Length: 338
Image 1 (cartoon, one colour):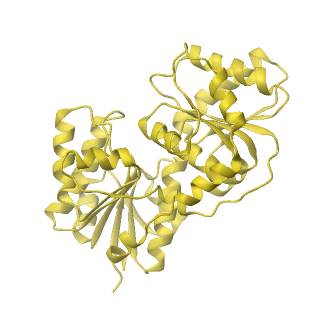
Image 2: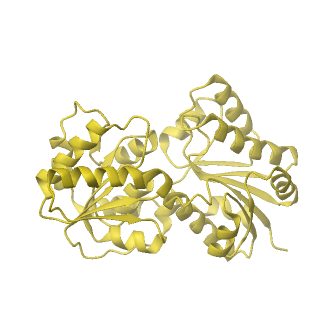
Image 3: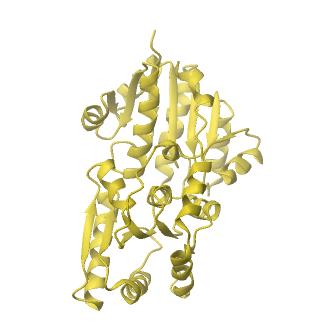
């Protein structure tokens, strides 16, 4: 009989990275003929996109009924267990895990990045719940060590998107810039970044990537206006997230990518694009450190020249070699799905 697998995560919000993770996970589950249900903000869209069942993530009755009737709960991937973005969202994801434990359902933590956890209460809740899970996997060494130091044994895996074969297209000389709204990013930083882009790439097309329209589009528009203020004839285009395949193909043709979001950096690496990461979150810093990428902080005092110089000197073959080293260990999970 097919296993009933319930998936909990940041799904149905039109976020490129999370939807990419969901797509990879569903593809794997389909190999086992699993009966899949996804907790989603937009259940109808999720159901149509992936050919699975989906229920409203904040419908308490349906949520609890779905947990009670599943065979296994998969929580993740992404960075669900952190309180820097929202304490309420942490409590939600922890409630899902807790109720599954109450119902005696095996819980699989799927390739998550853990933290930051700023509150003592957050740490107490998360560590207590993870100690009750059937399998805990994390996508970076810092998360693994963080949990180990707090008594939780976790298996280290790569981000599941590393397991996807992506196209290696000829580079067209275009420069990609991927931004998202964030509390510590200000106009002074954006203007300095725009000046650097204009100084170096005024003769190239600039593509501005909105990976999640609700958080990315307005800041992309603002940055586009800054570029045009400095260089009115500059060629620019704002690229919205419509489909994963379209975004991936466009990124694969870039010469350079300057990116904030984790999966923008990841896709650029996997397609051999010279990349400069913007350090707005620990997960981006960790990936840049692993891949030897230059990292730009959000400080206006920073020397922008050095990170851009390092980006331009990167060897695409080194990036591809790094991405090939990040094999995803599906065998850790398959026994829960079969």
